[in-house]
Each structure stands twice: as C-alpha cells, then as structure tokens.
Amino acid sequence: METLMERIAAVMREAGEIILSARHIGETVHEKQGHANFVTEYDRRVQLFLQERLAGILPEAVFVGEEEDVHPGINSGYAWIVDPIDGTTNFMRGYRTSAVSVALLKDAVPQAGLVYNPFSGELFSAEKGKGAYLNGSPIHVSGRTLENGLVIFGTAPYYQELEDDTFALMRSYYRRCLDIRRSGSAALDLCNVACGRAELFFELRLSPWDYAAGALIVEEAGGIVRTIDGEALVYDRPIPVRATGCAGGEI
Image (cartoon, rainbow, N blue to C red; front, side, top):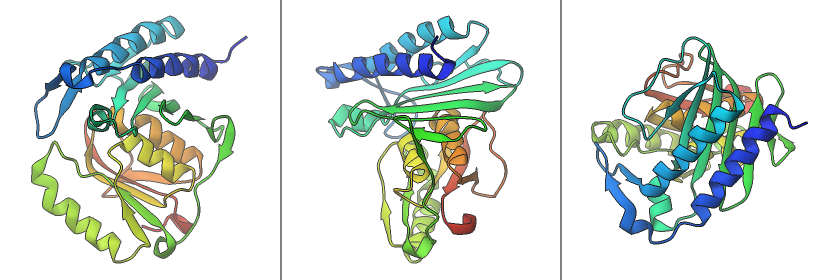
C-alpha cells in the first residue's frame, strides 16, 4: 500500500506533466497586484488539479493555494499549503527553474514538505522527524563556512519598497561569501541549501506557499530556517526568511 508521501509525490509528478505540456504560455499570462507579479492559466490549472487530487488523499484538510483570493485558517487541523508553479516568471520565459511545492501542516506545524522540479525530474521531500531526501536518497546541508559558501537570494520583486534593504544585505553577504546566486524560485533555493549546493538563502518577504515545504526540507536536512530577525516561522502571513546550512548555523 502506498504511503502518504508516495501518494502526494505521485500527484505532484502528474501536476508536473501539466507544466511540461505547456504551449503558447505567453498567451495565457495575466498580471496580479504588485510589480512583476504574474499568473498563467497553467498556474490555475495546476492548482485546481492539486486541490482536487489532494482532497482525495486527505479530505479533512483545508487548502491554501497561491492562486486564491481568500485563504482559510490553518491553526487548527490539517492544511495543505500549495504553490502550483513557484517561479512563474521563469516558467513564462522558458527558464526551466520552476517547481510545484506542497506542504502539509497540522495545527500550523509542518508535517510534510515536497518540492518537485519537473524540468530536472528532482523531487525533494521531508517528513517531520524523518530526514530529507532527493529522489529517495538522503540529503544533508553542506556544513561549509560562509566564507566558502554560496549565498542564494530572492529580490522580493513584488515589493519594490524592499529593494534597498535587499541589495544592501546581498552586498554584505557578497563581501563575506564565495559568491552570490539568484534563481527566481524560493522553493528550489531552499532545497539547494538542503542538499548542500548552497550554504545560505534569504528573501525579505515570502508568502507561506513559497517556503512552507522548502523550510521543512532544510530543517530535516540539518539546516536552520528562521525569519531575518531570528524568529520562528509562521505560516499564516508573509514574512522575511533566511535559511542556513553553514557550519554551526553561521549567518
């Protein structure tokens, strides 16, 4: 009998097939509130698919998806937190760095997180207390020092008022680390910290569907995820996020 994680993974792979089958994406693009904030018909199609299929796995769970205007509360019982295509601008441009992100919370605490990049075929996953995996093989943060590490950052492009603070922090890290990277998918950035490809990630404002799955994967891989101010994560509103896989949690 399939486990819960296997069932979720199978649904996500099917969702990935919708993404891979996309054609004429530019004809389906709509702008949302905020600078450079887009949605495609494929975002909506994938979200509807996930909502229907995940309901079949755990009917009692509420569904919180990026492409909804109103979100239910998550503080009591089970909740799915879903980004159908994290990295929509990449998807629109054929950049091939986008992911399906699904987290399952119970009483506002993450229990499972999966992030799937259909372009690479990489599926990152974690269950609370059971470690983190890439395509079924265990992963762990690198443990390198920041001096020898790569820093990935997000520009929070929907919030132009954060531009100066974002690039000031980026410059500060640039002076202390090996080099800087920017991918356009926070979910995949977190997973790259989890598997040791990079040592630190930050973005000054992310929504829960951007980080809920990836944060659990980092933590289960031995890393630390907090707000920029060092507070514990919450999943009911946007927050600034920093994740580290550096030696001793160095930031």
